[in-house]
Length: 276
Image (cartoon, rainbow, N blue to C red; front, side):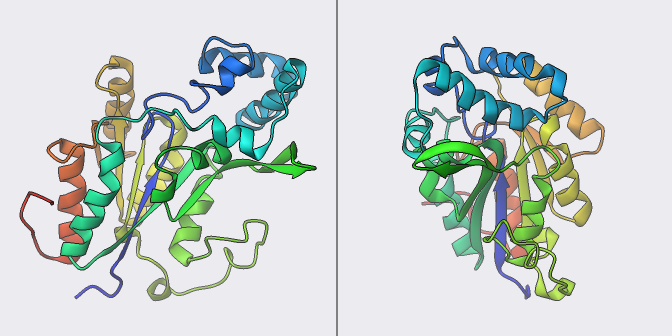
């Protein structure tokens, strides 16, 4: 009998759940760029002399390029940029189906996003209501307009949210008290009850944190893009992750089976393959 029946699935967002970058469909084009990559490169070039953190550069670049275009960066505007995000096959049905697997096993499955992207954009996406919390970069607003980054989740600071989930310190992000509260292992969600899904080198600290702690880390890749498969394979060969798999979240594909098997392992029992 397990002591804790909670299981936390932690997801990167861009190129892990979404089929591309969240800025692709609206934000980059509104700011005058043909693609998200062109927008990122323009931000990097604009702030290259300041040794600026990449995520901070993208947040500041959004504000500056928007000002040049006469666009106000508001929470509502950013949420509208998430409306037409496209996802990998099976993603929109994934959460309910995985929850159903957990329920049959007596497990309570929780879903969290831990992204270096913009939280407000994710909040506007079609799957936002599937997550218990969405962690990412977001802005401080004054008179409804973004004026400064409020929180930044870069490749290393993403790991703090893993520990927040473990401790149940999932809110009050500006406070150091809850996340640093001394707790025994028995009081925290075990690492073995945690699963992290990401897609690239920016997820490596999170991959390692979960894997070394005894949880499951999986690097997903776009089947249409050989480079992403090579990146995922490299993460596996280097011992960063337990598995790498195509980013197809359909019930009959490898990723679904990996998660199902792992949930069965946690619960100590098996269920039939088909989930209604």
